[in-house]
Image (cartoon, rainbow, N blue to C red; front, side):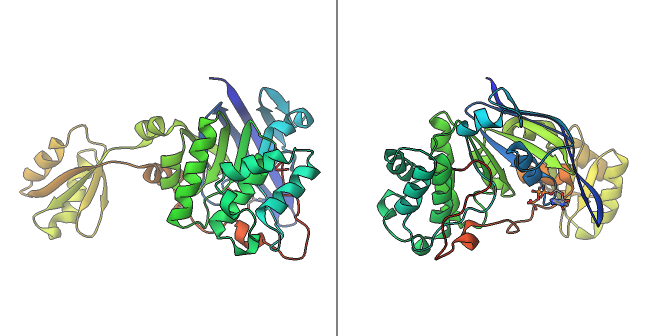
Length: 332
Ligand SMILES: Nc1ncnc2c1ncn2[C@@H]1O[C@H](COP(=O)(O)OP(=O)(O)OP(=O)(O)O)[C@@H](O)[C@H]1O
């Protein structure tokens, strides 16, 4: 596999009247060709700063970045035609149809009109392509945004929170779309807080916290490396929970006390739980392994709960009576 995107030691410090804020602190990321790569991190961890820096919208203070083997920002003019991105809010004419919108953008970008029909088909909007955008669901607007970024038939597609604000049906459609694009050989980088989705959509992930990479690899690798297998332990008497937690900690376990059970990790064998507790006259009524998911790894690594709904949504940006604006980056 060859890397389509490489970032090494990226640094970005914002300076304002309020003070100095280090948004990226030596951040690294590698995205291999043909993958759907999830870029995960809590609010304020540096995802948008990374994507904006990559697209030449802000200047880093240090580090190196390359796209398709070319060093950026120096080679941005040469690689820009191979990258589609939605990092800023795309804005559409509410009174235009998807076909009108994409035709306008195709003309502006020197893309043949035939490509408009291809991308409408790709994102599943062909049947509604003549309807006004203001009648579209949020999911359809998101797909129109993706269609606009696909006009140039990019090799790398960068999407900031594409599933944000979508209902489960919209998320499923977006997931199908991403899978289809990856199958066609495109590399997709998507930032998201919706961790369950990332686990389903992505081949690989990078997790960022406080401007640094805290985990990277295939979803399976990240889970295997960072997820500690936990055991749910219920006791015959709930009143024994606190003293049992202390005993298990003495035996080397990490224990979280829940209202009616314990979550125990860090012991080599589950039998160590039963033995430790039985020695103290405490009996276990349930002992079951809990499979870690990406969300629990994320919580463990970043120490932060993922927050949904705090990002831009295409829905908020549909305007009527104004020309379609450029989305930031290289979407057009
Ligand atoms: N223009 C700016 N000036 C000053 N600080 C900024 C600026 N843009 C971002 N920051 C700060 O840099 C840090 C990283 O922000 P960034 O927007 O990259 O995070 P993020 O991971 O994209 O968050 P979110 O998921 O909320 O979009 C945050 O602490 C943020 O407050």
